[in-house]
Image 1 (cartoon, each protein chain N blue to C red):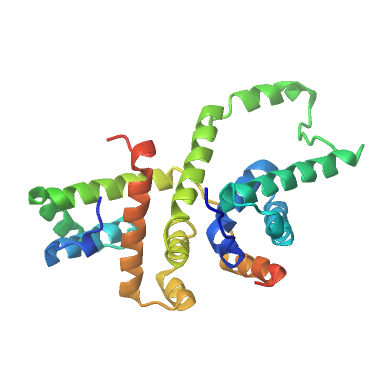
Image 2 (image 1 turned 90 degrees about the horizontal axis):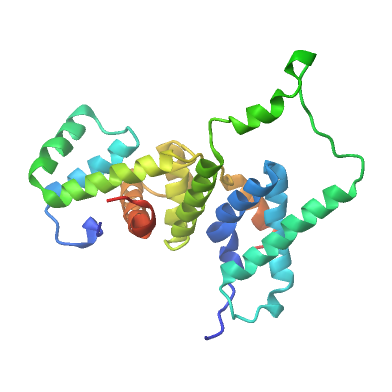
Length: 82
Length: 183
């Protein structure tokens, strides 16, 4: 899954990549999702990207991450005088 | 191997989440885990002159973290008589079923280990990308912050946010490719 932004990729594919990303966070509209579905039928590159994107989402969702919040990190930095 | 330089100013952003996650899995208490992580960084800062550069910065800090976790358990175990096991059974009919409940827990030990490894693998992969991008990705994907909050806190526009998320997802997918994706 190479960086689509850094290659000479058609604008339509870049847009579909963005919609695919939004879809992973349930922020894509109905039309954006439809555009992804239609586009990946004829574009192997985007199909691979979308497929990997979905797999990545599933993998991350398998796990409940307990991380430090921004303020907790700032507290630690303050303790360290950094 | 050439001597590596320490970058203490990046420690919290780069390793904070991984160390916190690791410490939390060992001590099961958020505040304690947070204290252990800050003590680790503090000890690292104090002893940075001893860093010989024969291992990576992360490996060196991890060994300090492990010592801090051992110290924590030594300290609580030395408080003799204070340890207690809380079991909430109120009637005699339930006596003895505690062990069975633990064994029949829906999340098997194997799943728990795989999940812990997965979490560590994901956080490790995120250490290799721009720390600001990793932070944005974590806020969006793992901590469910609103887009507006992320953009405001990190000083980026909404379209920048999606570009950063896109790049982080690509970097993460390629890092996890061999070990976690079954294609």
